[in-house]
Image (tube, rainbow, N blue to C red):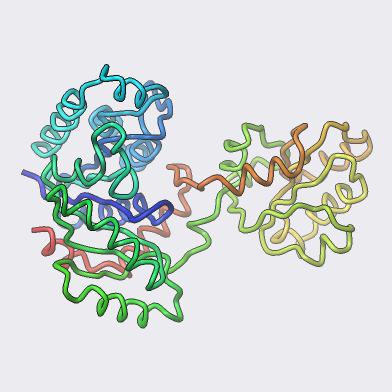
Length: 364
């Protein structure tokens, strides 16, 4: 029978999948057979002939678990499914049976099993399967992941903890992620004081890492559903800043930061030409990640020739700069198996930040 840990969160973008990857990486040192399951997948994708959530698809690709992929996400939330449930056309028992069958099989095949929730404690309640309910259903103690801060963390944990207790799911650890390095020790000290009467351990997770939070050029292209033109060797380059290049040419240069993706209107010939030329210069290459060229007006022929000659990565769309900026900044940069630089960093940081022997004892 496998040791099980249910990974939950207090909200979005806390680092559930990062935590799952970290624990799987560390568990390999002790356990011969490790596994992963996300019982409910709210973000379905088509992956190698399977309909599955994004996170188990990533984990399956990283660890080469293609043959187990159908077990790794037994309930995929498709459009219209919640309405079916609310109309009484989709019994919750049917979904519970699918989850339990997958978990039981993986328990028999694994020594260590990560069960990742779909968000905070209440996510999934609309179909009768909140994270708290699923954790109780599969009999897995909970590791709750949260962001940095003190007051906001205490408030969020208090709300989430109430539902876990209502469902009789046991929270054994709270992992604090996205800590400010200069405040890390003090933040953890105060949080341990705040939760000193609780029956769970407060563990320090990762400091805030821009490289983990920021997207690659490939990710941006997928979000916008566009093809990357230009330098194909830089598709996995990480974008640290997105800037609407609406100011004067000089002002754009003055405000540009490291690894910036610039959104430029197609009629800004002077700016497009200058950025293309600067991209070829070593001193500017680190600053210019690429361009999103927006607008219905065609790019001038001479400007297009210069763009192509420079090999600067760019995306072309007839949409407005505001539309592009809003869509991209609203997107959560999900980790994918292609993000090899990020995954390597996660494994390295896990070895530095987590005491796996302590976690192993907590979830004994």
